[in-house]
Image 1: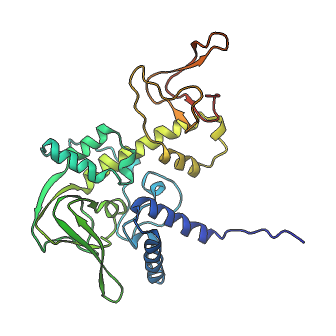
Image 2: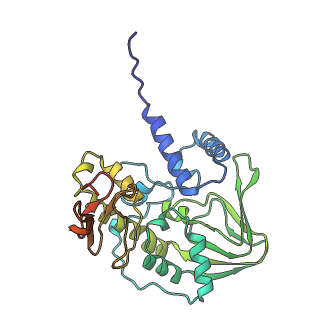
Image 3: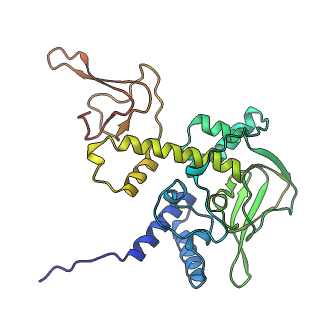
Length: 312
């Protein structure tokens, strides 16, 4: 009996990749319902001369952070290109008390792009957010309008509604004194995918497209480039394609250590691979004779260790 070779069609591969990225970005509570809505929306729009990316507010991290893959441009305008951003104009800051800053950080911690930012970057974007008081019934963003601001909900409740091709409107999300919306329309420079209306009086924190791109997208892009340079030094990762290396970059998370702090001990189960970005790391092993720890190596910026690499 001859073996049958199965080849995944490129169109299926692309669709599944885009959907996987969408799930990672939106982090839906009910993935089955989310999948049904996503592919229904995709089907309803396939006969229109519109790229799939403009169906909803979603993103592909490789597109946003400088992938040179050939993709169709937005129907509204060109996407922000962090490689061409040389703007050094000072960004306006808006005062906030400690409690307000804490709430903003809490409401933005699960946003995909924010996860690659360090504490200093987060503080800058929080500084740049301006307060916006809203009244019950006020429309904050309207489906089909151009994206101009990213919003963080501080107080109040809000409904996000989507109107389908038949003009029927349905509620897709409710924000209850928490959450954020609007970032992906800014990134794609595409029309808003939903209408968000205040159902009570409330307070939002807003940041403009220009500031958001400079403080979030540009910083995320710069970090990816730095991480890519680190990965290029790892012989075991050289067989990876550029896109795969970018995926590894996006999976990296910062680990901050104080002088003298132990990352892991000899005998612990390996939990990952580590790259030294700043500072020095001392590697020690217990002597077979007297069981005393002795330093066997020191790693600085550009070195890597952990898992199967370097035997630690």
